[in-house]
Length: 314
Ligand code: AHR
Image (cartoon, rainbow, N blue to C red; front, side, top):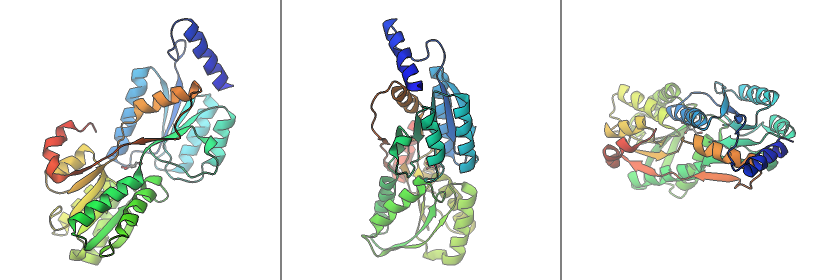
């Protein structure tokens, strides 16, 4: 019904010589955000909020404090408010079918932003706009192998348990390392994508393995920055005694590379706001879309940081 009304609105707009959405009333969109656990996440929120403002979209924003049940509540409230579309950054991969079925029954298109879900029913969402997390993990592993000349020890700081970003970054990393049996993962533990937990877990790793750790692979910058603090407090020189590679490539991590504390970063683009609304408008207009709109990322090393830091947008 909603799709039909939207198509009719667009047809009227076309006949009147203008095809802009919301000529009469602004598009109403619900954004079920995960929380504010990392610098990356804040950059993503800012991107969505500022794009909404620029496009005149009435955005209903919800911060779920990293809890899936809060995201589900937010989606139900968006449905009750009769929004035109929903952007969902799913904290974990599973458990979304019931609420997404409710959105589907209400005729509200849902776009997954930045993380994926696992479901047998792909019709529950229009498409996902994310990075390729497996690729990111593989890139990190290739760098580790190169840095260790094919032999040495790594510890892994994982993201939120059950999150696609964590599971796939681990998968890509471990699959790549499986081809290099002399590079060993001493231990993997979650730091929940936060600086505080990343530091705590790294402290425990340092107590247990000390100088045997040659590289830390952190699933995001914040945990990597926490690990840098732990390494320094344990009396080692981060970036030299223990190498650090992280994912996200925020300005903060670039600064740490300039300072010599982080050795490499794999980019993950959080500036998804404009693309999210452009895609949602297409979905509302009934256009066919790719199921996965992949963001392209690349790896940067410490040696490039000083030159590139001024160009970083987040
Ligand atoms: O889903 C993307 C990940 O979530 C980012 O890498 C991390 O920083 C965030 O919290």
